[in-house]
Amino acid sequence: QVQLVESGGGLVQPGGSLRLSCAASGSIASISRMDWYRQATGKQRELVAFIRDVGHTYYADSVKGRFTVSRDFTKNTVYLQMNSLKPEDTAVYYCSAPMALSGQGTQVIVSS
Image (tube, rainbow, N blue to C red; front, side):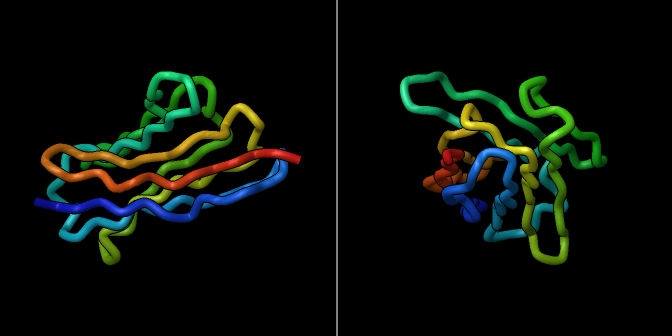
């Protein structure tokens, strides 16, 4: 079973950028879809973005135009580039995929 490990979170000021990584223990070439979720304290988990095997991407309205999901097959890694960050983007970010184990997530804090 593929294990996913998220990284790249941290503290950033409003308007700043971060790039999250989701490293898979195996090949991602055959994975139909890889998702990025986030969960803020006291809130439900929210689907932020996904990328399908054919390259189609989806973004939640709240991040559209600011976040970009991409992948590197040579590194078996999916990325979430986050620009123009807002305090409301503060959350723990997770990646997930069918038949894969998600990691512990990576904390993003947007604050001045």
